[in-house]
Length: 395
Image (cartoon, rainbow, N blue to C red; front, top):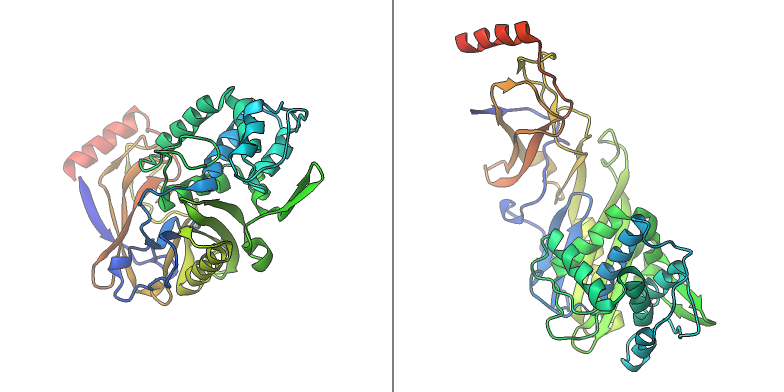
């Protein structure tokens, strides 16, 4: 059985994730000279603006986001070590013939995994990507299988990899949205490796190459991530920036960091992809407010629990919850809680017992968030359960 409860919450609390159609005057993204783009707020986990975000396109070297993720996973699983030296195969050497970006390694060298990661991420070296793939899986074909398997785990139905480098090949496709998902996982799952994407230049074999992400030198808040280019894909860039905003701290009023990811696919030049991303980053930060709703340990409601050792349950959302809304809209939302009633022990931490429903002042739905148990409630003894059973029957 479910009952509906209207709960009065602080004004900073009642803003939830954006459903653009729910707002009468949702901010419109600027004109963007790209085939596809997406602006994603990683703090609130919501899309702020997009065009053709689910259209399959050539990802070029943005492919190396997934290549790197698989390598990071291998390091985490202790299948590789950063100081481990890897041989350079003839296949890696042959990447010189393909016309793509290179780290400029040859078969006489044994670069370390750390050096190869810098070569793949900073220099976008196709040769480095091949060596790492062979180091993890033995062959690039087996490594591509790992890439596609990871895409399936994340539900990336519009992504299919045919190689580890991003060079044009039939059937090698992805989308703006899927690429943002991959980048998000790198940032969240491997913060210790994310720092590679902020490196502005890297020198190896006496050849110094700058990171082709021009925003790293133009915007001090930009700290990643990856560029790409082929004739078929055009100039692509997935960028991320983190800026300080009010109301994001632990108490809901102090400053905190807010991170956006933007991606543009199929632009006309290096300058264009940098300029269009900068435009989208500025728009996303300026047109929306992102606010902390509550901490992962702060209950929203504490209803009565039956047949439990504790008389009440602490219910809330799993993890700290943030929301991005158009500027000025945060205080105009309504929150309603729908939950199971009665609540009967035992209750486990994280168990879903209802939904936090958020709507606009006119009743248009914005988002539903699971209402979960924050602290477990053990079952009472036999006499306590029997007494509550009688009370419930009378109730």
